[in-house]
Length: 203
Image (cartoon, rainbow, N blue to C red; front, side):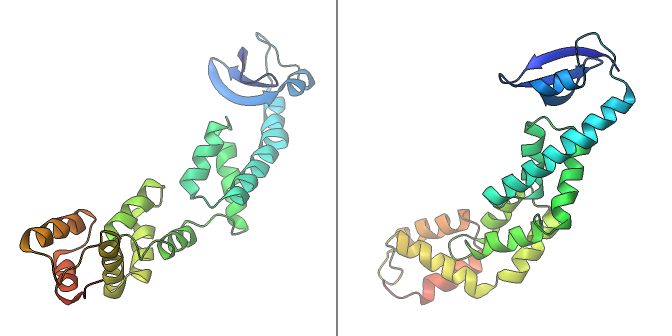
């Protein structure tokens, strides 16, 4: 492998290109330690040492820091590590490392996410939000099945009606149609909306 380019990322960090391909990011002192210069060969043994001794240790620490900072899905953590310039192999090993200690668990993340929002959003909104965060469909569906039932949907709709200052008992036909359309766009089913609109008391 030939070092074909050394590109500054910051004053102290540099992206290394091997055979015209972005390989990894190192600090300035590490360039000297491993004698990395444009046009020089990087032997396999040194390449492996950089991956295992330098980058893997750094990626594990970075992953732990990111998870300590806030809860993240596996996809979100992977994206952060990729943004940090870590090679795919190192990224996956770092993810496996934090998962082995239970620090990264998409199913647990999904349950916590739903628990904190199930009284404010519909199942469809929660499902879409989980998918946007990188939760796979099966995990998202299982978490929703565990936490969501008809009573949760009703509570969420009633909370939205209070927020809108809508009183079903005194609203006219057009007001009821308007709010029903709003609830349907939020992802609630027609039958659920009809039941809430019929039995809700003025606020």
